[in-house]
Image (tube, rainbow, N blue to C red; front, side, top):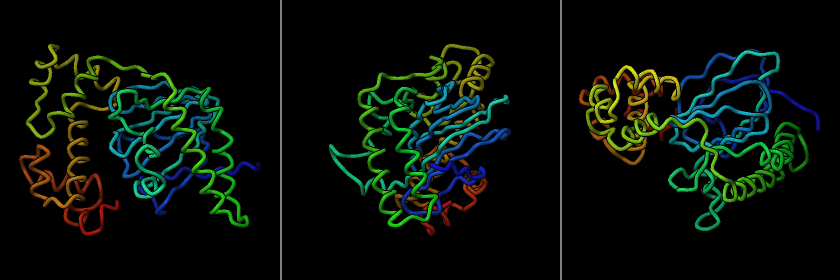
Length: 284
């Protein structure tokens, strides 16, 4: 297989309705802020030094590790400078396309379902070795102008997803660096985002000083408590808008007491107003 690297593209939206795959290699890369996607992501780490944060959990990656990310998970990668290039394969799959590939017991989204008690974001590198040929074959079909290339690419994608689900079902949970304090803070935020959450109240709820909470949360989650709360509220408000909620209703249900502040924050994050998000079907 001829290796074809693609230049890093900072966009966070899909241009195809089914799936996209990238093979990136960089010596220097600026930090990507905490974010979420409207699609599923499979991240295959190949080289360099990188840390990945997912919903308050910190993973120190080793080459061969695979991360499984669902649309509603806030995540962020931090790349550390070094002599070895930062190399990875990233696969994006739209919600509708993945749903079309199977349902019920044969659902191929099971490995992404963080509501399951056995769920893990991380498949260890021994699992990555098993699926690497499928990543490479999928890349080749998408990068080469071969006869029936799209049909073949869909076949490799299906095989890859089946294998990832089998590995996830049989894998022991890989927890990463999971600070009990940050886990409790994230759980509280996820359960009470519709209510007023002040730093003082959250610290009191967790029985720690707000200064220690801020330090530990920033270290593990990679962002401030306040920003995490705001991003979580915006994320859920967007889902409500796509389900037909009025903008003012979505704002109120997600803990925004002031609609102009919600409007500004939403437009800054998604580059669309709440009303435009509904009209354009949530594309951003």
